[in-house]
Image: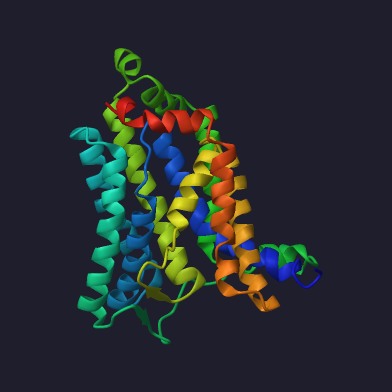
Length: 307
C-alpha cells in the first residue's frame, strides 16, 4: 500500500488531470450558455493531432500549440454554427463531431506522416517542464507540484479565473442568463447568440490546450484515438462539478487520481484490462449517483434552451 500511494502517484495525478480539467472547463462554459457539448472528445482528439502535426511542420512547440488552437477553433465554429445558427440538436452535432475527428485524424495520420496507427519522432521536442522556484525545494510538496508542463499550471489558473468570472463579473451573469432564459436575456439587450458563440470558441481553445498537453506534454507522439474517452470523462466531470469551475476542478482531480491509480496498479501484477477500466467504472458510478442532479436535467433540455 505504501508503494501505491507515494509522491510519484500524486505527481502523475496532476499531470494526467490537466487534459481532463481543460476540456471539462470548456464543457462547463458551454453548459453555462445552455449548450451541452458532447463533442469534447472529438475536439481534444483534433487538438492532440494538430499539435503533433504543427510541431512536425513548424518545428516549434509553441507554434504547434497555436496551430492546434487554430484548428480546433475552426471545428468549434462548425459546432457553434450547426447548434446555434441552424438550431440542430446539440447531442447529435457533438456525436457527429466525435466520429468526424476520429476518422479525420486517422486519415490525416496516413496522409501527412505516411504511417498507420501511431506516429513517434524521437527528435521532436515536447512541452518544457517548469521547476517552480522555492516550491521545488519543499520536501514532498515540491516533488508533487513542480516539474510539470506550463499547460498543467495554466489549467489550474483558468479554473480559478473562470470561477471569478462566473460569480463576480457582469459577463458571468450574462453567460448564465443566456443559458437559463434566452428570451428574457434578449429582452434585456443581452446578445444571446454572441454569448453562445463566445463560449463555444473558448471551449475550443481549452480543448486544443487539452489535446496539446496530451500529445506534447505527457508524451511526444500521436496514436489513433489517443484521447481514449478522456473527453467523455471531462463531460462527466462537468456534470459532477455542476458547471462550477472549482467543482469541475475537484471532479477532474478525482478522475485523474483514479487514472493514475489504474496505471500504478499495473505494476502489482494485476490484469491490464482490469486496471484500465477503473477510471471508466468510477465515471459510471459518478453518473449513477448524480443522475437526478439539476445539471443532468438541464442537459436533457439543452437543445431547447439553445434556441
